[in-house]
Image (cartoon, rainbow, N blue to C red; front, side, top):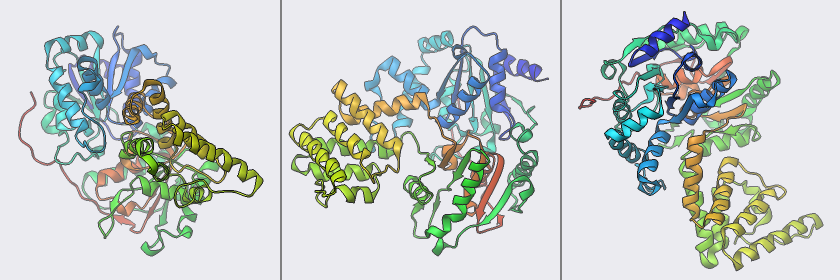
Length: 505
């Protein structure tokens, strides 16, 4: 039956497959690849690097040859097209002062894709285009992809209830209004994610989905017999006390002992004082309470990467203030405060140590500081950073940030380019390559959509404002689900796309 569905789906020049989370959309793409006889590869686009990682793992598991597909984010694809045709210098700046990098890059790419020669090259390069997670396409992205429809077959997959990205005033694609040219399919009716893992949990998540689709409240009732648990969330005044995290810590250990991969989802929300909570620093803080046992997920283009690069530049050009700038850099890189205080005084100078073991480290540290003072170079800064990270009592709260800067410093030493430019290059490479996630992670729904874990723990489900975020969170779980909440009955807003004018050509 699936072969027949694939045949019908691929026979259309424009087709869209709609299915809930966990119902086999990724598997369907895999089967399309394995059964296709196309000589040219599929171009497969998605939105996140988590999504790329998920697809790549599925393809590799099913032994799909790498020459049968090209896998990219829509942003990465746009960037590549612009760079190949116009050169890297044509890309807008991606520093923290430019908030329009992606929209500007998208506009450049869209203009290029409307040129007959570019369309011709695309048609020679690929046999057809797949776009996963299409519910997250903005109308601008949709318009860009529509320029390719005449050149290649375009196949879309998505679930409107998982459209959680917020692009300000930029509306998301509307499946009813914007996809009238596409034949719609909905033949994936089996919840494969839970079929062999926890079928009853899958049925429960599907029943909650039905409530969410209807705009009804979701009543949370524990079903521990099939690994669905409801736990009380700490009171506000107790939330940041160490005792509050004992239950969460035990839950992680429990699933670890069962050899289950674990995802902790920390909803982004606004406190009464207006502060946004659940962002990177908050996740790092929570992870420190949990003994640094989780990999903290962040966006590839998180501003902190470029801010760290600029801090490193200040160390090299900051004159006599280089000690302060170096200390600021260590803070920006999320080194633990106690480690900084153990080895550096208030002015940023290395402390004198009497203990023979510590004295040996201290003398080496002083030597590296002298080298940096004598010659302000990326390689000397690299040596100093590397040694400082190896010191006793020093720990890194956010290793990906630290290692990204090391790579930028290495590249700068070789190329002679600025550290900031090399950080842009490092992140661009990562954007194309994607991320590898560990078995124990902490992130938000935005960062984990497209991923699946054996066990999912939601830290404060009552903080979700929109139903779509809650659904994405619960549907990441394959075997076990733990929900910490102060409310056992959850009601959500049912926001729809904002109105817009204009038609897609």
